[in-house]
Length: 175
Image 1 (spheres, rainbow, N blue to C red):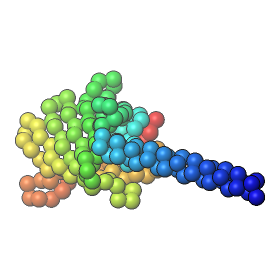
Image 2 (cartoon, rainbow, N blue to C red):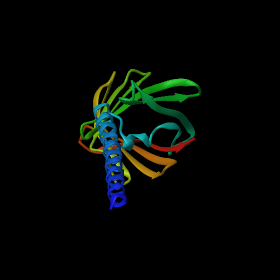
Image 3 (tube, rainbow, N blue to C red):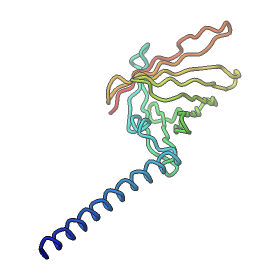
Image 4 (cartoon, rainbow, N blue to C red):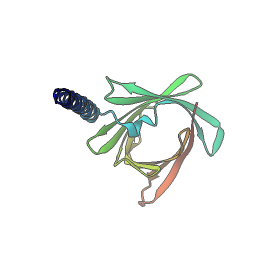
């Protein structure tokens, strides 16, 4: 009888220890998820991390290098676009609540502000404005994920009669 009681105590201790480990692991997951949400880290934006070659569909000889990494203690993703070793623009991405925000600054003085609800299937639709020397224009960017190594970015602007016209169609391939 005594052996059975010791075995039951061991089994009970083992079950309690196992339950404590499960609770600790679950809490780590909650803390990580909460920290990721609070500080803007988001796996749906992680797709963009890395180095990309951006080619214009209308002119395959015109290409850029876009390098994206975590920045500002993981609260933002930052990207730098270069052509022939010269910086062309810098952009910043983050998740803010249930929205994705993107801000870009170009060497010709333009500022871009976009936001969207996030990925829907393989598409990310962002809308906003660009402002520069000529004033402010409504724009939108539709990103279509082809696979883990390629996406397409279609940029459109609203003209004076309210119609959307394409001003850039990009093919982006991970290096």
